[in-house]
Length: 117
Image (cartoon, rainbow, N blue to C red):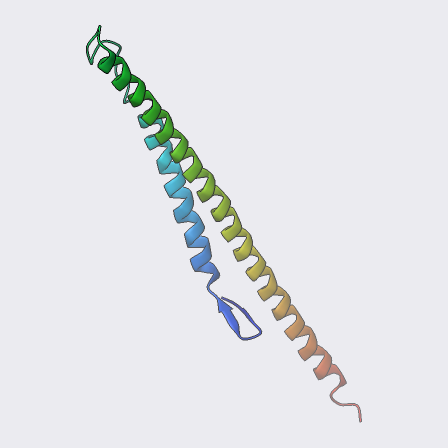
């Protein structure tokens, strides 16, 4: 846990969050691919020779493309925020390390000069 100036940060929880976000983003690859390739409606399936069939097929393609773009956008957000969370965890760990080094340096300095009057 990082700490200093009265705050505590559970770096392990931040790292766990990054792993969970990455797992979600990876899982969305399957959903995105499925939305794109597993929902195809072959031409003529909805009928032929009337405007309703063509309009329905067109709307289906629009929704398929929209769903794919939404999944891609969600993956982008997850990537962005998992990166920011990872950066925050690394910054807290680095601060904790610097705080420990400062503490040990101050303790060593106090111990070395403590016998001089």
